[in-house]
Length: 493
Figure 1: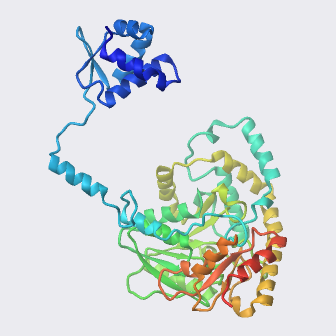
Figure 2: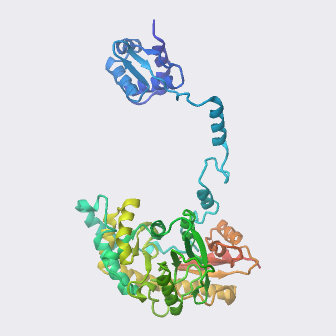
Figure 3: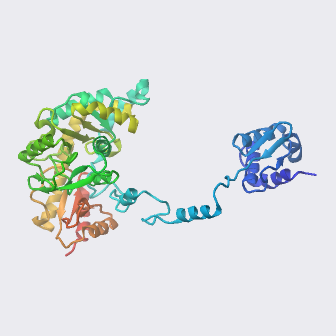
């Protein structure tokens, strides 16, 4: 007469299917234990007996029993045999308390999500800024990645991969690959008039990580931070995840106006060379005034040098960081706009007093890596391919910008373009009448295959200007006019 255990195995073995015999037997016994068919404390047959009853070798049964014992489903008593373990949780909670906990866990969050999220996470997700599509007319902030000098980069990468040094494949430490830090220091010195040496360079995974690290290192809960209004939505999103008091710097013709209040900020986020998203340039007088204020108040300026490489008329605007020796400025740059966003390589130029603590914290918080990619990028800069690529793209983007500006002036009129916007960057701001719903217009355009960003979403407070950000960098010349006319059909008559 077969045992209950043998009957269960024979009934369940065929449907289980697949895998080795000891794995199939293990799955059968485990399932019977979990669904209660083999209750706690019930004995399992001796391995020799079960093997005979189900027609398997004893070693197969022993392997299955051992796996069950290792995972805690059964336990063996010397001289007595193998028994099913207690798999249900201990009943240390009263029935009333258990019902209360289950009821509380079942309640939806304030955002209506099935899982309970922290309030700051709910606030973050209530107004998602990142677009589902990141390529095509007229997605702002995206370069033409098809023009990336992949032939040079792949050649460098292939050579490095043939016999990679061990230090390029393990965890990195020290703020980035030394060769890349040296190449970045030289590039920003020549191209952006930044005062630094390689010891002040910290390589990051983009601007967001640089902003996040700055907040973690310099801002305590309830301390004040100034952010441009309107400003980069990425700053707003990172700030939502910390308990800082955010004050808006109203963007004016000369740059950013001081917010009201007597409490000095710990950090001041600005884009002085090409304000994002409006494209204004902060005047020299305002830059010096901001530097003077930061020194007197003990604040730090975070200078995001957004799109500084792509200026189509006149000389480049030097970085604020280079106006004074040892300026209280954390300078942030990225290769996302000049090469391709998926590269995820940015950098910080830190004041000397901050360089070492930031470098140590970055290694602990984010676990540095990508050393081989950084080494290849360093060679791209050192061999002059990066500078040549910037020159080519500057000509290409200027042509596309002029084409889009011409269409706007011809079909909509000059009032739709901001005359104060600098001739730089990767996008234009299409001005709209105050009573327009730029969010609805952007959604309507997206439904027709044209991507834009509503200007009002870049403001923290109501009363925002209405407009659309139109990126021209990633749109081929032949596609600009058709996309523009599709967008024009979505505008109010």
